[in-house]
Length: 381
Ligand SMILES: [Zn+2]
Image (cartoon, rainbow, N blue to C red; front, side):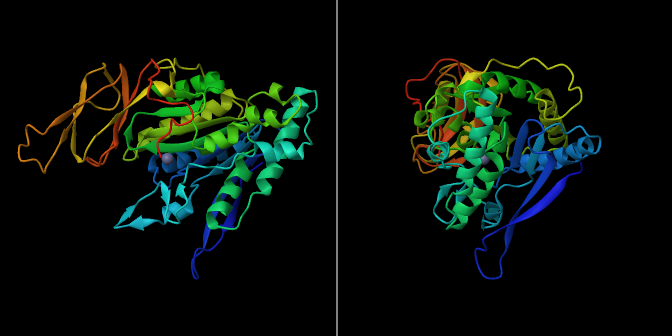
């Protein structure tokens, strides 16, 4: 079956302005596992947009040869509102100008609403229980409020993704190596995805907090049981993962070709697409707990000069960057070295070199939990 493409209109923000989402659909709902993939939820993740442009022709070809075994839903851009938010010639991304905050925080938790639809209990048969929960989640998403543009947008995206087995939320960082975020329950799956992508860093959280999109899709599978008899036995049937496709400037043909091919192979390994993905490469490094990620912050404003590149191995106490204070009478004496708080891989740094107090200028994936990192509050705004 060929690809079906639809355009979903969004509320107009102003007279004379219209916005919409493009949705490409492959395969047959219910025929096999479902994957949902979108690019640029924060609107400013250009590498993810190019990767999806590379992935679509691959999916088209697989569709023409009958190799879509399950269902695939692809959005080439997730956030038209954010794409149109320019200030001073820059797409600012990340935050909605309507005041609702970070585009990837506070996604609705559908657990309780879905449990209510189930009448408090589940079928004994696990496969049947999964189907019933998926239907309840779909129904709960369909009833999300749509009074504002932001609410409508969230209801539409969750409505497309909530019943998927795999939710691949494609982002990028500021300057970074490839890395991923997912729940610790999905360690085995992210080891496969991370190996195919060649991601040096894959981060696991017990409870990230913040209500990110991946978590909104994955978490109901282990929280719906709080509202059901026997629900605690449900498998974690949705692998929600945030994939950070390097840094914002890493929009390169060769990266995008490789990343799209890796996502395609992952979908083959999971039975969403047919064909032989070939042997799985070795994972570059063991997965890391998110509470073992050191955030190197600055205490005051200034200009940051880096001594380490993304991907570098660092040791605790290494100087990763120096903060310069252009307002200091003694510029040399005012310099402040910024130190690694753990041994590990410096996988991310900040592209804006003029920083303000409290800004996080580097992330280091270590192996030991850090006392200042708290479960439930592990994501930056
Ligand atoms: Zn993002």
